[in-house]
Amino acid sequence: MMNGRGKSDRPVLPEKSPNKAGQPVAEGMEGRGRAKGNLLQQNASRTPCRTDAPSALERVRQTARRDRKLRFTALLHHIYNLETLRMAYFGIKREAAPGVDGETWRHYGERLETNLQYLSDRLRREAYRAKPVRRVYIPKADGRQRPLGVTALEDKIVQRAAVEVLNAIYESDFLGYSYGFRPGRSQHQALDALYTGLLTRQVNWVLDLDIRGFFDGISHEWLVKFVEHRIADRRVVRLIQKWLNAGSPLLANIYLHYVFDLWVQAWRRKRACGDVIVVRFADDIVVGFQLKSEAERFWVELTERFRKFQLELHPEKTRLLEFGPYAVGNRKKHGEGKPETFNFLGFTHICGNKRSNGRFTVLRQTIRKRLQAKLGEVKAELRQRMHDPIPEVGQWLRSVVGGHIRYYGVPMNGPALRSFRSQVGWLWYRTLSRRSQNGRVLWDRMRRLIARWLPPARISHPYPLRRRGVVT
Image (cartoon, rainbow, N blue to C red; front, side):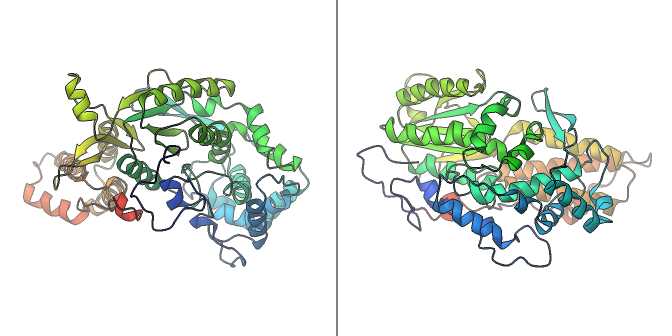
């Protein structure tokens, strides 16, 4: 998010000034430096945890930050380091589905040190062989199925160890508007950056980008070339090539860093006259423009750019829509109805007005399809748990409702939160009423169960402008 060329700064001040002049507000607040997960790591503790790392990685990080063009020639020993592999093991989800070999986290951990030593030796001798990825399909909201690769446990360990090493290099390269799957960054930071940009910059048009089959469309040939911009250790490159089909988030970020992020940075510096904001979380991208003509030109040029690297914008899901403080008046003047909405990271973004002063704001509400799909999952699971003890079901529902509220509990989304909690309570009531033929559960008892087990609907996140330290 940056001002047009030759334009003065607007009265929007971050708490801390950006490191570079002309850096967008969202980037300035997030910074181009070390993320939270990349604090100085001089001494690794004996208790494995995600924030620990050998001090050697800090030296790699500092070197990468000092010289953005340096190619690293010796990295494999950081990956097969026992401490790095041990941290990678403890960073894996313990209940994750096993891969083709059926190995589970708990079984592997019964002889952890022996297994890790054997894995380290194979990596050092370049005798490690990645196992095939087990392919499963999960249903999407639109009825289609999303392919999902389930990696074998040892492959997950090696990948996480490699990611820790590669993050030490690429975190200094990635740009501020890239938020997906990075240490110390989250979906809500991306949502806050988008909200801040829409309210504090002159954004009148939003380009909602959808890359068709992104993970399947990545060119492995181009990806290896991009990796080799920074990695000259052929052993590490060959290691990465072993799991190109697994859909690594870091490799996807590297691909879009070169294909999209750097290109956008140059485009808005050299080609844009009006304000342009960019927020990317993995392959979910939203770009805001002050001028419609620039948005249309950007769309055309980005399509050509993606085609060069074997990516394609979905022709139906990629949309340019009028959005911002003047959208309501402009569309009413032309008889076009209310402004269109767009979805990003689980929220529908809507043009709205503040109750206090009537000024423009962005309403963020839970995507209706997501909410209905989650209720469908809860309904199906309750049927499976129909005859389980009530405290056991109550604890499970507490975790479901609590997790939903923690993510979707943003300002002005209270009605959707209360609706979700209410409908979960209703589904539970119907399930309990069908446990026997003795009749339905009395509502007085049901209210007590709901009050005891289902967390109250509340706002879990502050207003983005307040949290990000930006004032208007």
